[in-house]
Length: 453
Ligand SMILES: Nc1ncnc2c1ncn2[C@@H]1O[C@H](COP(=O)(O)OP(=O)(O)OP(=O)(O)O)[C@@H](O)[C@H]1O
Ligand SMILES: [Mg+2]
Image (cartoon, rainbow, N blue to C red):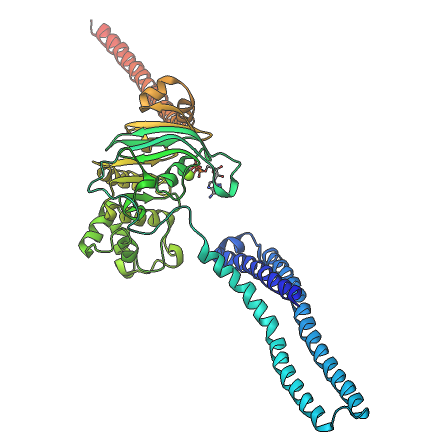
């Protein structure tokens, strides 16, 4: 019985994990329903979901068989005892060892005993199922997170200067522990400096920011603020001093002003409006049907990518952090909006330590230091001009981007040259015709004067 109970609990846990997987697929599919429609992937996702449900159903069937076996087995046992009682009691009565009354007393006691046992038998599978289900909850409650997010634990400072140091930082994501994303990364950003990270996709730029936000701890090495390991700080206090505009800004269901207020829930509506103006978001917000009270939809789906980015920037502006992290913060904006938002960000960066990540080099060319990352390491470091002189990775990145601009300039130059040569041709034609006219005139004048003489 104990063995069966053990297996029922085990299958309950297993089927719960399988059902959770199926639920994850369906909720993910509902979240990305537009992508699914656009790829006409409805049926393949339904099949995937069904497959996962079939796996869970298989495990549930095994569990149901075991439950049935438990109940069946217990009733079998009960009826065997009845039979035994009647048989043995009858034998004792026949032999005159026991009076009929005693047999009935014994039998009634056995019935009451077995009825209690039968009740247990009916709920035993449920007890085992509950045990299996509770195991997951207890495992979650017992889990000790590696990064303690509780407030009041760790150091707080009256003031942060904003010096950032990465010292020999090596890191791999927990889900891919064998792939090193950062390899002995060293970086020092002095207070108030703007440092840009550039480099190919996947080189580890966003990871640097994730470590600085302490979403993860490095495997080896230290991340420090003002020469103190960020592990020593009270995490919530520390994060209040860091503002992040991420590569894929997340908005929450609610109004635009609620989303901006995320940066500072105590801010006044005037401050929210001021932040929106700084982020070049004010005009588009006022064009919305309900202005700042317009609903943004689930994850901000009712806004464009650029509008979401501007709200995320306004949120960061309102937070007024000492360290500002901009991960492709203006990538979804057109050149004109980017220029305006960049001006706002330039103002925002004054007096703060800023790490800015951008693929468009025009966005970061004025940074105090530009670091070029490749395979989790900084391979080049310096100002825009210094890096161009190095003639290395940065130069080739710049060359690729300049080629586009240059080709546009060259096209314009060619057009201009063509129109200039056309103009030249028409001018020379005009000159030629006027010269020949003058010559004719002078010839006729000469003839006239000769005739007069
Ligand atoms: N949560 C994660 N779990 C596992 N691996 C991850 C995770 N996030 C990123 N990676 C991997 O880490 C590497 C670096 O990713 P990262 O996002 O830092 O690159 P990036 O330089 O910011 O690229 P991009 O310019 O495309 O934004 C990539 O190879 C990526 O696949
Ligand atoms: Mg990135």
